[in-house]
Figure 1 (cartoon, helix red, strand yellow):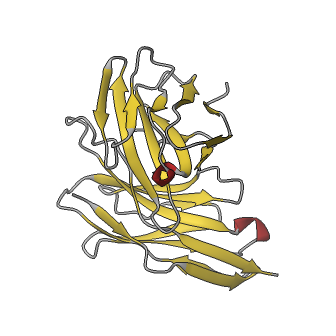
Figure 2 (cartoon, chains in turn brown, blue; figure 1 turned 180 degrees about the horizontal axis):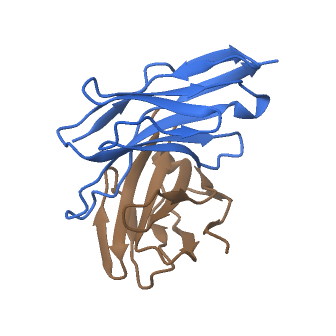
Figure 3 (cartoon, chains in turn purple, green; figure 1 turned 180 degrees about the vertical axis):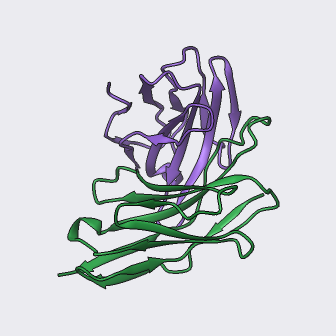
Length: 111
Length: 119
């Protein structure tokens, strides 16, 4: 039981490049979400999903796309990376009213 | 919209002593959950303790306990017998208990308190 996994752990991008951050869970949780963590700002919600085929925007969605084709996976896409997207990204999952469990994070540097 | 405020950016405590981290929140809801998460240098977010708003009894997990004051919208974390491994960023978070609306499962975080343990 791996819980929540994220890949890659660290990535460097150039401005304008695209990439996908991967998140996978094996807990059969319906709810999955992406947060970004910036210094002095805590964690902020980017996008979330309440089940396969259902996604919605969070607090800071601009510049990011998501899709949810399976219960297990919830990738986050950056279509054209910008320096403002330099951050640490966390994926989290929850089942119903249970506690949210976080992945180990992906550190992204956009030059 | 809910907000969570942690007014202490940094705290320090002597090893084996007790420290209290503060958190206040604002909400118009009557039923919700409150959490404290710990983030050590590894960056992993680790759940420390959880409190359901409908429960009057304060939650306790070993050396960690909370003082939940619903009327005052206050949710402080007390760490007893502080250990070197307690050094981390601590985040207070809020979550609605109403799951009838999509998105209510999201967590709203405070800005964190960095706790240093002095040997």
